Length: 283
Image (cartoon, rainbow, N blue to C red; front, side):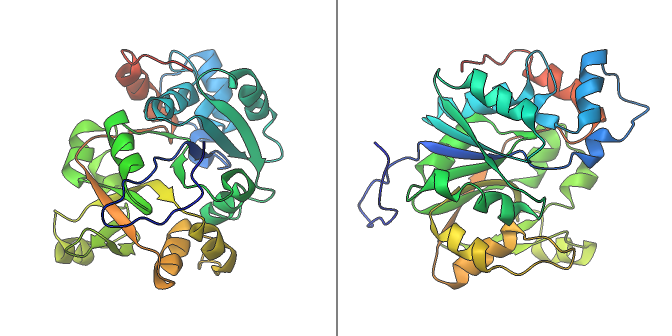
């Protein structure tokens, strides 16, 4: 049974979420781009050219690993946010659904940013809390378990050094991730996107970063409906989070010192495939 209240008391144990939203609407621009250093087989290259990163075969479709990890932490319903053209993901959802997880889709008609993608899943979420993740990231199961245990709304705050050491993500890319600031109680106070060197020095090495792993209450849909386009013309989930916070929503920052596998470009495929070689999948 799904929870119908997202409020908790100091002594209440929150009901863990059973729904997750996977954002798979991205255009895959980096993945489409040729990479002379990447070694892909013919099938991987064909999928990479389509831009549907989550369907690249790394022993089995990358998305299988993402959904299996969610099932491991108690998720029983998954919604893939896709574009109108993504028949391959519709077909994937149809053949994957019915095992440990029911998989459905929601369409984001135009690629207008991550807040717009989250909004597309509002009917799926209903009044329940939902985990929201990128389709091109594999998050470790223990980290997802901690996120699912958090009260109310939450996000994973990743240790930057651990990301560099335990991920396939180089340090220069980690430096560009949004910094997560928090108060003494571990509640989110701010998100600093694409910090410059001065900001990185000012906040210090111990300030965690966001990898877009969220736990949302229905408050995120109200905020996403009100958020203004960013300077690049997109509706950003970070802006929606900060707007929800301004309206009284508390976001718990869950600290994580672990790696995340990133499937953004063709150069990532071999490293991701090697890292997932021993991971069991059960759908």
